[in-house]
Length: 294
Image (cartoon, rainbow, N blue to C red; front, side):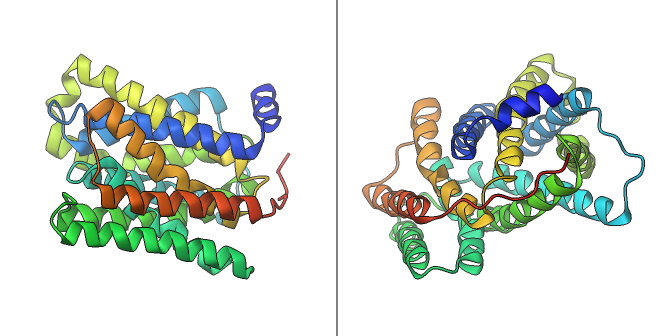
């Protein structure tokens, strides 16, 4: 495991984040394409359960000798992980994937505002905020395919995303390797287990659904969260938050290629604002090294 971790650390943290972005959005597109066979709660639980099993098998986390604070952090990380994924799947089950991700970005956008100490970074964030406002207006005009429930779930996912970013940093400091991520994934899977059994017990007995869930788990959890956990050990949370604003563009691309979801002109303008803001802020942000546990 140490060799794999060392190999990941040789990759630029920016590239690790970008790999995670593409993987999670194409995984989400695959997941949405299965919603006519299994509901979003069932699919998201299979995603989390698959990733938990794989991460525990690979990381073999050491649980002995952990302080109470270590457990508080990893439990909070797991809860934020589970609720973020569940609410996000509920959101893009109701609204286009690209729109859901753009709304979800309000979470890390708010975090970037709180953590930023440079005026130019605030200007980039303001541009991203303008894009999100345009997106909302496009929905009000009747061309956005938005629903109140879909927007609410996307905003909840955004709040959990902000918590995930901060708790992921703390988890990486307190738990070596992928131990913390493995434990948090188990917590998230257990958290959603009652809901998954309650609404889709019959789907969990279908081998096809289980295979699709495993694929989604690999694309949307194992690859992106592993990349992000390693990246967050050497990149500032504010820079990470702004870089993640590339998510809407990746989601829109995945939505078009996999799901045939084409956005309106106003939504593309809104998304362009978010992407330009992320590129500008990333170029002006300084990566700050953070301690990495042995």
